[in-house]
Structure formats: structure tokens, C-alpha cells
Length: 187
Image (cartoon, rainbow, N blue to C red; front, side, top):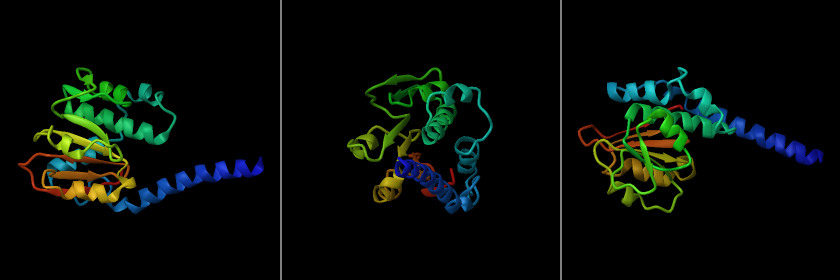
């Protein structure tokens, strides 16, 4: 009984320690430091790392007890609020997407990507996603820390233009009018 209690306590503490180590390792990438593009800087400051309380945060906090789900959910809320898509592929973060953009319709299958969340470990082929994007598309790729090789392939793919590595997820833009750039952000 004591051993299982100590193991559970140690496992919880290891998650916190890992979280703090990731944060400390990326501290020099905070708040848009080193980003020269005004558009990318504004995106990092006012969408990714926005800390002001939004109108829906209190109701969204009740949706999950896990800190990472809440953190990513709030990011997806801010992305939907910023992008204002008309259609999104339905997923478990649907309440966050809808809170950020009330006019969005959620569908299982979509022909064109405006804003979508994709797990890097999903079996869906990235080529099928690339065939549905345009210059205004935004793709969020979760769990990039579990497959760095594939994330780096996405960063260097000629179809992607601007990428943001947030450790827990990556955000990809496809706007061909912009210069190719890969950013690491402390999220």
C-alpha cells in the first residue's frame, strides 16, 4: 500500500518536473523574443501566449481535470477566436472550438481545411491534409514531442511555410506569400 502511494506520488511529481524542465529549456523563446516578423510576433503574443482572461475560460475550465487538456483547449479556443473559421473537423475539443467561434460548423469529413487539429500519431496520411489546405489554412499537430522526426519533416516540407513548435503541439501555416520560417515557442 505504501509503495503504491509513493509510486503514484512520484509519478505525479515527475510529470510536474518534466513540465517545468520543458518550460525552463524554452525560456529564451518566451513572449516572441527573437521573432522579427510583426505578424508572427503578434500571433505568438496575442494568440499563443495570451494570458488575459477570456469570456469563456471559466466554463471551459470545467470540461477537463487534466492540465494539458485545459491548456491546449484554451489555445484552440484562442485559435478559433482569432481565425474565425466557418467549418472545422469535429473532434473531442469541439466545445473549445465552438466557444471561440460560435458560427463554426463541426463536421466529420471536410473538403477544405481552414483550421484543424491533427495528432502526429494518427494513421491519417499527411498528404491527404496537404491536399485540402490553401494559403489561409492553419493546421495544429498535437504530440510533436512523441515523434520529432516527423515534426522536422513537416517543418522542412516545401508545402509548409511558417511553423511554430510549442513542444506539446505544432502550428503550421501555408501562406506562400510569406517567407519560410520555423519558430520554437515557450508555451
